[in-house]
Amino acid sequence: MANHVNNYLDIRTVSEEGRKVWQTFVDRMQNPEQSHFDLRELFFEGIDSDGTFINFDWSVVEEYVGAKWATVEDVHEYGLNVCSAWGPVIPFGNHVAQEIGKVDPDVQLVMTYEDEFPNFVGVVTFNKDGVDTDNELDIDELHRICRDQNPELAALWDEDTQEWTDEDGAYELIWEDIWEVANNWQEGNVEWSNS
Image 1: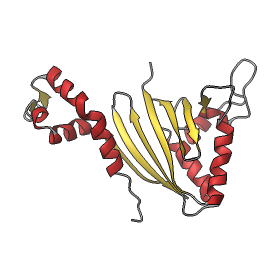
Image 2: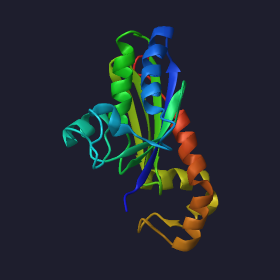
Image 3: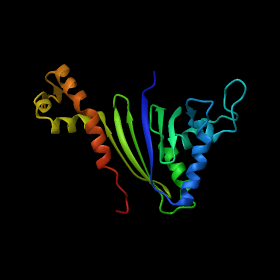
Image 4: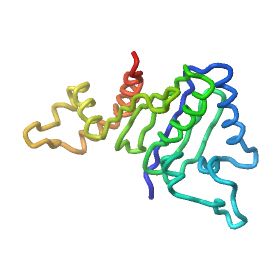
């Protein structure tokens, strides 16, 4: 089974003209007949009667979606939530930012994402040209931050062997803190290259 990645695209700064461009994406993704929208549908000519995309091409998915599959779970005037397979949908955020950037040079989007375990978490900022900054932490870095912030957890880490002295106890403590640590790290790492 694929690891699910939760992606949250937030429209931070957008002009009225830029909002109209975003609304064209929203209108295409909102379908009352579907509970979820497959993000890949934006980039193909439709779906055949057998359920496959017309003129499907994996290179298009890689360039514009970034994940094997990506399901839009919620879309609205301020952004969207997407569940994707194995990786984040950074190429989609890049595409949206560039499309809005054609009419709004000051557009700013922020995408946060996290693997379900979490093997990694990240935050990406976008401007009119696409990706502006891209920050990611892997599971080992998340564990290190958890240890740095929790003395009880730190006491279970053997620096010499680089292993837990009580793995079950350590993971119990980690699960109490890891999502808060990840979310705080994401919020603290929203940055722009020109600031």
